[in-house]
Image (cartoon, rainbow, N blue to C red; front, side, top):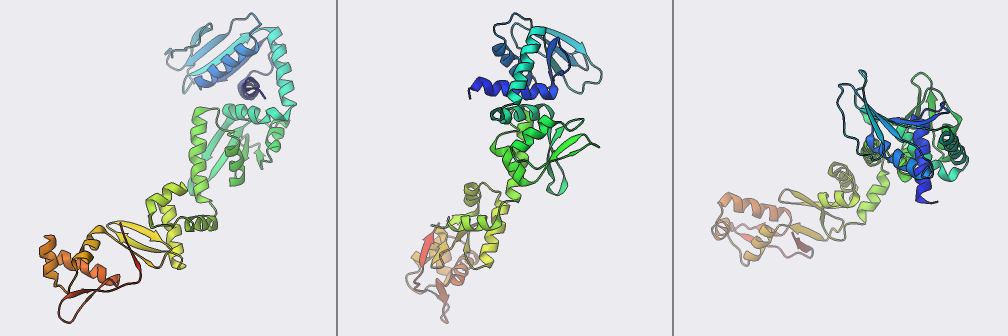
Length: 340
């Protein structure tokens, strides 16, 4: 499939969503996203390059302002529309011959499922929206006054589960499986703002509904060496809170252990490793013979309390002991001391 056919199919979808479908005399497309107007216009220029016509763009604003329209060889007209919440644009071509040709193109593309992906992408850009609410509610919606066969065909082609509610005139698509289909096929990507909203919602959806067992098993493959929570979150592309929750579960199951170095937790599944800071390592290297706490304080130029705290932390790790003579002694260990 050529790139131009993809663009034409997307414009078919845009026109089916926001075009005037009853006129026999003109092709129009209405939208408040100028990027889509520009895209539709440039594609029409390619389709009808052998026709002689004068394209027009009508700009409607509430306050009579005149947003700049940077499209060459188009007649630009500005109008006031008191109910316009934001500027919107109408692209228009007046030609009976071109309307006839355009309808032939639409019927052809709607009859061939290889174009359905791009038609649905265009239709969603025109009539779709993303609804998010409390408690993680996420719904892909397509506005429509009544249920239509061609929309059903597009959605059914992708095995999407949906329902149509006549009360709010909406196709409703929920469930992560359906969001996965939209994401895989980039069906919400043509309209820049809708694209951003879709992917923001999908990233959260994916994170919250990620298979917990999969996440645990995947994490267990990443402990070749001690690693902190921030790095794990970056590798897994999840939030630190989500990763921490899973790590705590794995710790309760006895599959991993953690050591706190400074204010950072480092995790490992190797029970033969003890993780310490460079400061604690310096204390161990200095402790060659039994020594008092005051000797450490003097050597490292810190308070007695500070040295006592470091030594007691090493004691809890079974790396030193406090003798009856009031002195600290090193304990030989079979475990690997890993310094971070």
